Picture 1: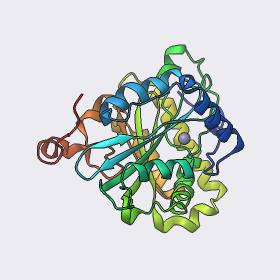
Picture 2: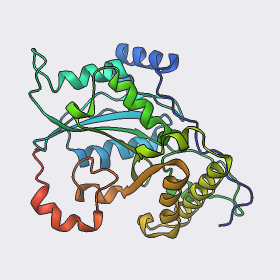
Picture 3: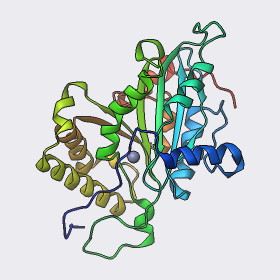
Length: 291
Ligand SMILES: [Zn+2]
């Protein structure tokens, strides 16, 4: 379906700063724990949480949620409490989040008892009733149900701010492993990261780069509402969008449909090669979780 006009921004930018709204939400949730819509019991296996709770949240909730998973070196993992944001924005609470991470890795003498391989920080991209740009045909409900929402420009920018926010609380990658990022939409999860050597370029994104990215983003969204197939990764639009993240935003991205999350290690990240998963699956990935 061709676009009639240039696509508008898909969503508001994320802010890594703890905002008054988020703080109010956090306080409200503390006093009303039942009000939380996305809750993940701490020992839930990675794939179960993603394919059930998180998928449902992306499909049914109107607000974004932030979720954090500690991936330990022994192959096990733990979910930290979630944070509810607004429609289009959710921010980490670095102070509280860091406290939770330390509580689950250190003993009373601040020694690491459970070494961490990675800290996985994700957020949902909930359903939106509008595409944000015009299409030549009217949209049906089914089309909107299929709509994918890849990481936004704000998501890519957020990576460095999040890293700095946690670093200020003593959460450093040499101790706690790499911070990994993902966004969950109606179709699956989008791992994303920022490529370090493009810092300066993205600070002052050119208008052309941004416009090109929004066009490539819009093309993928259109493709997603047009196709029943979950395999977006085989489409030209997907390949173009991945290139666009790299050249225009200095970002690296990889999509995994919900059905395939179980075939990969927990929080596999952008660099995991899904085409080699069959060989690797037996040797490397031995889940320690029990249901
Ligand atoms: Zn996002």
